[in-house]
Amino acid sequence: QVLVAHQSLVERVRSAVRWGVVRPWDGTGEQIANLVLYNQTDEPRSATEGYLGLTRANVQVRYQPSLPARPDDEVLTVSIVNYNYRFMSPWLTETFVNPRPVVITAPMAYQAAAVTR
Image (spheres, rainbow, N blue to C red):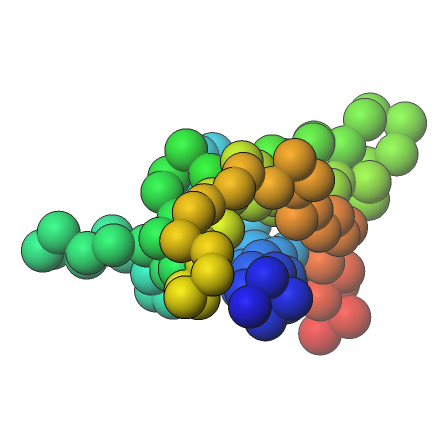
């Protein structure tokens, strides 16, 4: 159960990073966080639980702007931290917090795509 949940979280983060690196940084990262939580860029209008019980506090989105000397060096990092794994087993009915975050980092690609067109 832990392996399936972990791999599902990795794929959700990977998908959000792929979406985020081909678009200009919006200044907040909320759209990317919403992709991880709800699989859509906007927060749902009704109260909806995040994917596998994730909350906004579990999702971190960080943008590192480029330096003047290296204008093509923008980086996007999306992480899931302090995720509570929930066991659904007759023997284990507890949760535990994963001390290792799911982290994926990628260079921003939207400028490179614009240049090659």
